Amino acid sequence: MPMDNIPVVNKIKTYDFLYFEIVGTCNAKCRFCVTGVSNHPKGGIIEVDKFQKAVDILFENKLIDCNTEFGLYNWGEPTLHPDLGKIIDVLQNKNLMYFLSTNAGKHVQYQPEWFKNMSGMRISMCGFSQESYNRIHGFNFEEVKKNIVSIVEVAEKASYNTHKICIAQHIYQFNTHEVSQLYEFSAKLNISFDPYYASINDPMMLRKYIDNRLEPQEWKEISQNIFCHFIQKRRDLHPRNYCYQFDILNLDERGNILPCCCLPRDHADYILTNIFDKNFMEVLGKWQPTETCRECIKAGLSPLKTLGDSFSFTNFTVPSEPSFVEVIYLVVKKIKRRSKMILHKVKKIFTKKGLNK
Ligand SMILES: C[S@@+](CC[C@H](N)C(=O)[O-])C[C@H]1O[C@@H](n2cnc3c(N)ncnc32)[C@H](O)[C@@H]1O
Ligand code: SF4
Ligand code: SF4
Image (cartoon, rainbow, N blue to C red; front, side, top):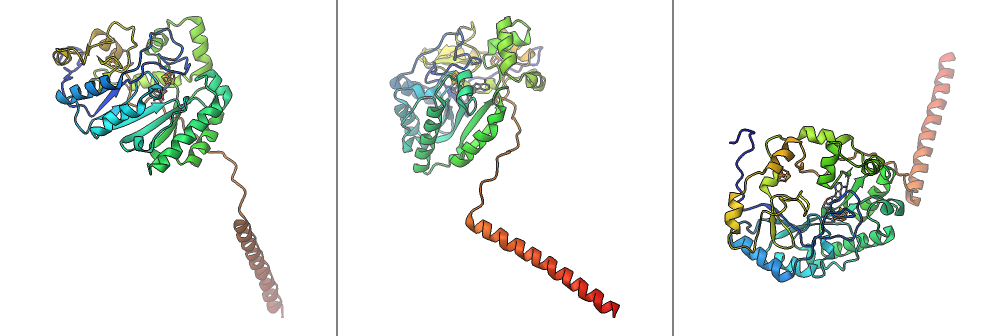
């Protein structure tokens, strides 16, 4: 084991989980994400044949087996793939499970059969109003709601357990009052709800924040939107000799194998090797945590498994109007209680009178 206790990493194994970026770009304008409006370069879209070939190579080299789950995204929006159904087919033909995370900004005609091998779906939301959507995703909020309703309708048609669909509300300073509305929306659709604090989702910007190197404009934007109190807490929680990305495989839409899901495309260490290279297994096998990793771990910046800290809330929604039957029940209950009280009082008077005799 090296001096700093970072273990020797073995990248040659059968992975339980991998991220495969099928679309390296996005339709949203999230300002704290590497992809959104940042200046980092964006990626393209993988062709179905290429995806099929990559999956075959992964199997041939035993990097995956039929128990491996695919996250079909990393820093992009998977639903922008024009042949999403065919990508899903490739996985379903091998009986592989997959997970989607989407911003639900594009109307996609989901098919019931897509849910067969879907282990779950996260729908990332930045609030429950057009004002919130203007600040982050830049979508028409009504369209987003419609898209979500249509996803759930198809899931129900497919007899899918809709609780495996989860709305993740990213909590910003401007949207805490929308939590109970979004909770109600999820409850009505019978899907899960997970509000958690939005983070600075661009690792380079996060690094600048930690090192006090942000430009005044960046400071201003962060201080007006993000709850930063938990960033230090998360850094403190971090193991200083390990990163869970060592146990995950990450591929992008060009078949590049990445050391982790965190580095942007313009980072010197972004690519480890490429799955279509003849000697890729050799290169993968030799990979060990780099200087970037050491710095990242030392600073407590390698990611935790949870994307953000949970936001606890009380559901303050107004109770709905009671039904006719409920009203009758309440009235009868009240009459019964009153009669009991009257009877008790009458009984008391008679007992007193009897005693006075
Ligand atoms: C970069 S997104 C890519 C997938 C998809 N475009 C989406 O937004 O769901 C990957 C994950 O990061 C999460 N995410 C995005 N912005 C975030 C933020 N500011 N803080 C915490 N998590 C965030 C999303 O919920 C998503 O599950
Ligand atoms: S968080 Fe998702 S939706 Fe927002 S810009 Fe990044 S990839 Fe797109
Ligand atoms: S750069 Fe950071 S997040 Fe990526 S593998 Fe290295 S330690 Fe983990």
